[in-house]
Image (cartoon, rainbow, N blue to C red; front, side):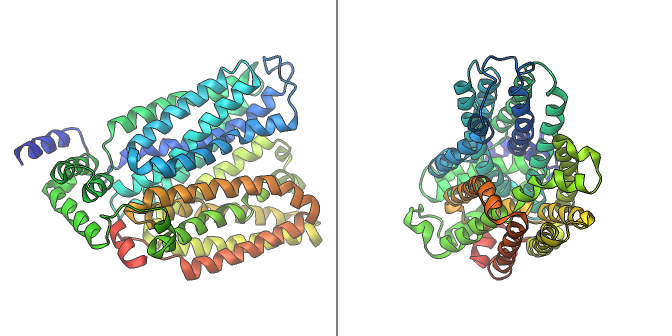
Length: 476
């Protein structure tokens, strides 16, 4: 007990108050780097195809080659999601994020310094594996360490960081796109953030709940892991938690015992009982997040704005920056209200707006083509409503809804569904557009959005203000 008090006294000397939850910035950098990769790659593919500005002899790339550069990180993220399923509970959230930061760094350097196309693709894959691990571990770490009354804000801020990274990627890319070998500078620019993320996660403590899960499952000394969990909680919450840390840890241990966390989850159990219900909610949300038309809407953004008389819309990068700034504002709004309004109101209201906007877009391309203002309004309505709902709340819900012993594997499946659906939408968009036409395609997305609205209304519970253990006991 004396040793524990000395540890806590030392920790209080360097930590702030509970309200100063700035530590979340380090795991959230995983989202920033993911967003930056999306934005910078859109500019890098322009630079690398230029005979005069690429600075390489292998600039004559075909559409398949460009597709590999663009989608290489997505394929890597799929691999990273599969890896996360198997290693998450062994490594723990903190070490998984450290590994993700290392892969971000290696992937960016290999891509930026690539002497040949094949090496560049390898770098893109490695960076993508880092994305898969980071998108898996970051929401888990934040969810398991944040106070319940601000958990929604902190996890939603990760989505804010993704959008911020996209805007930053587009901005830096647009500045370097006319520079010789500019694509190399675009990719290497992310390395300082990867280093900061790695150092920050090395400095932060392990998730107390992950430590307690190991304790209750007999994967170490109960007393030692309990004491370590108390110290980690003190580091994360600071003086605000005071001498209540041991009681808080004992409360979590008691709740874990009540809900049966002492048994290690098997693969078969993931698809039974409350585990299946959590998986249905989590995977369903991230599936609908991807298949309700977001890539399609953004694909038409430039032409919609140009038809309404915005001359700058002819520059795809400027359109991306403008829409990115609008997305930042709407995501910031969601961050501010998510712990006051709750998850369900934002999902139901946001997806309802998406339904309206998708049917308006479909109507524009079929019989309202002389009313571009309708298309612009629908575009902004869709982007704004998406960032109020599926954008941040999808990631928030999958980090909250899974029971602790299932969280590593369950979130791994959800992230795999997310990136898999992303790949599916990316690959099928062009063929479906050619087969159905833009108007019918948007109507189809509108119908899918209606189905997702029914899914949210009847299946998705409200988790506002509940601890993770209360969510498992009351909502599953």
